[in-house]
Length: 240
Length: 240
Image 1 (cartoon, rainbow over the protein chains, first blue to last red):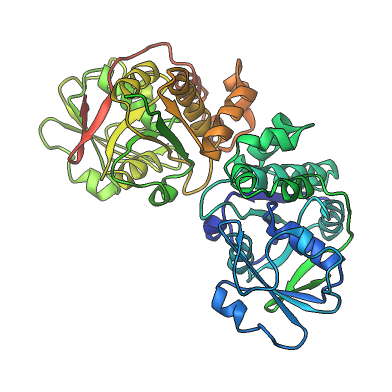
Image 2: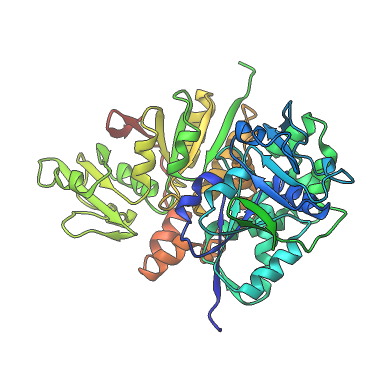
């Protein structure tokens, strides 16, 4: 097929309805930290991840055989839950073969809003695998940045810029989307030192104030890489 | 007063509800072309501008003594209206003392959405006057980009970056807002040649396809400057 496919970038979970077409592949991005956690948890052997909207919904799985529950609100873990939204909670933890039920401030909402599309999740851990999959699949793609409570954040568009660059390089994609252009420009102005570039960003400051600098470093420049592409099947993310 | 006031940037008219606080001063930006047209029309002597949502509402003023009606949809003028959304329609036209009733695709919607705040409009024509006014007033400010039909556009945030830079330079303003940071970064990557930088942007291409390159040049780098600050009073923009 010679026709190029289209890339759009949506800056917040709330705006997804403006982009929804039920045909495009949607890549959900919540770099700090939900989609980085999702990549990590799958690498550590979880069997499936159920993203849910509410704390109550997540708690209803607590104690069920084979399930672990994780929650985050406003970047903080929540009492009563086994895990939080830090990738380090999952590394070398007893999660193999388990189903993780996860609710976060923004990322799980983005997944929910896109559920009528093919949904995969991306982070710097699996970016190369995701790019390869999208290039092979050759479908229109919407890069869905989770944002922060309905508002633009800086880190998700920068990641969208990284992924868009890989797709454009393949020559199978094009874009007329101003937010994709802006994402690539922001990446360009950050390149080389994403950690410091984001030092004034709202979520980086939020994580810093909670002593979560290691999480930030991990998500921006992960020491691990994964070929696993999480894909939404029904209400569960599973390995593609 | 020593405390710094806050700058936020909202990327689309639709998202304004996330930023609304009924206290901040809202600067509406629709650079290509509504707020540039508004600046131009006031310079040419219009007494007031009534921004309206619908074509029907605008048409209801047609033929009334002292009123002129102008409309634009999808960058095109509309049959039956005296004027469109080009600054050139107003220059040396018979508009002195008239009330202009204006409806456009995005800008008039942004004004409407912000109507419970103090609302002023800005363009490169009156940017210096607007900055001076905001610095003197020293109130929290929301730079409201109109966007395109609910979606991010490139030119409005770049203008927001220009205005935010002037405010930050005064040392009376600060910002924790990722979209303000991004706006200034986008301006920085564009600086020196905004016209060419925007050549791939969606609205610049839209205007180009309609032979409106002169409008684009005028709005990005106007040959005229104005001290007039349009302010919303009731349902009308008047000179502050």
